[in-house]
Each structure stands twice: as C-alpha cells, then as structure tokens.
Image (cartoon, rainbow, N blue to C red; front, side, top):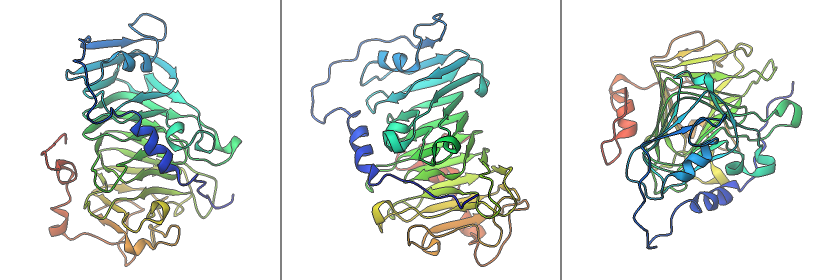
Length: 348
C-alpha cells in the first residue's frame, strides 16, 4: 500500500473559526434571562424520552445556561451532527447504560466535501462540558471513498471532560483547538479510547489523555501506517498534548507508526508542537529508532516532543527520542497541563 498522505483543505481554519464564531453570542448584545430547564433531559430514539435526537435536546437548553443539565441518552445509534454552541455551558452528555458501546453518536462526513468543522460528528464549543459513557464516530469509509479528514470530535471549549468515551475514525479523528494564540482550551480524557491512522489526535489545544487506549489502525503498509499526533501548540503555551498511564496499541506491522509530527497551520512559525508521552506502554507498532518525523518542511527536532519512563516493545531510548529528566517531569503532570489561571483540577 502507498505511504499514507494527508489531504487537507487549507486554509480550513478560516472557515472553521467563522463557523465556531457563529455559535458564540455577539459581545455586548442584550441577553435575556434564561428560562428554566429540566435538570435531566432524556433522549431516546424510540420516542420514550423527551427528545428523539441529541441535537434537539441541546437546542432545548437555554442560551447562557447557568444550571447543570444532564442529557441522558438511551441505548442506540443516533445519526446526525451534534453542535454545542459556546453559550450553552454546564451540559453533561451521559450514555444511560454506562457502557460506551451501547450509545453511539454517528455521522459519515468527509472534510473534502464539508470542510473540517462540517465533517465533525460532534462539535463542542461550550466550556464546562462533560461527556461520559458513549461513542462518538465518524463512519466515513476512506478505503472506499478516498483519504480525507473526517473528524469524530471537534473540541473547542475550555474545561471539558470526557470519561469512558470512544472516539472512532481514521484521519484526524479528534481535534483540540484554540482558534488563536491568545486562548487556552483545556480538555481531560479519562479512560477513553481513541482510534485512527493519520494525525488522529491533533490541534493547538491542551489535552490530557489519562489511563486511555490510543489505537492506531493499520493501513496495510509494511513501512508507514500513519502518525498518532499532529500538535500545533502555540509557543506561548508550555502545555499541549499529554499522554500518561496510557496504552498504545495496533494491529499494524511492527515499527510502522510514528508518535507524531509538528503541524504548523499555514506555515505559522508560532505553532510549535508540544507533546509528552510518559509512564505509558508502547506497542511494537511504534517506530523505535525515530518515532517523530518532519511535516511540511518543519523539522521535528524544533518541536517540543519528549517521553518519560515509557515501557513496552515500542519504547526505547536513543538520540532521536528526547527524554525528560526526573526534575523536568515533575513540572509536566496532568494537573500542570490543566490548572491554567483558575486552578482547574479534574484529574482522577
């Protein structure tokens, strides 16, 4: 099979930023007091709940909501986009059974046709959002229809938590995004499962993957089965992507998957990837001699890539695998990534 390539429709972030901005209320506009809303809203495809679709439940939450709202989703597969605007915080999306595979939010939209943001099955721009016990899937079949971005999740809000959530896709499965260098968007993924093949965890946001499984899909190549990360962390942010106490798995051939490469959107020199993989188990699919690689003319050596105390057949130490010292590692814990200026600490 040919070496995987990335087909990106650039400059997509212009359209994405406009789409997300459209979800945000205009500054200085008059805002009416939000009406009351039920503490729990039930979604059931068979009509036994308050709504049949997740988006209808989101739409029922008043703008500028200040009270906690749980959207409980009964067992089933729900096809359709889910969009949570920035002015609807404090929503928890919960799979009703507690088993992530029982509740599936699914769409099949490639970015080649719909744009990056338009391809995302779920786009959450609101802060203080929680998602648990369900699956978010972009079912686009790239083998049948051609390579394209096809996001499962577009996370564009601060203080978001994801617990026992499965993210399924191929290229660019999960995007964590800030929109500009002056913003910090933090997301915490605990006991999650993320799968994909090319750049399937990427973006400029700050995201911690704790006790999670990161699964690289095989593209059938004997030499290159893709890249796990493509971070574009801005230089004014010391914290980008952290993987801790996690497991990296794959059915791909040994030594054929890169840990990541540095993404500079539109050649932005201020986007300098920061990725740390620590205290994790790396499978044999990870390239041992050089797991980081260049991207679009930018050297991986200029990025902020590092490891610390990893184990497994894909974990080795050599000159192409920067390692943190124990002193440095003490300042790169999950709580350091997430604390920000408000001391947020969702770490389990």
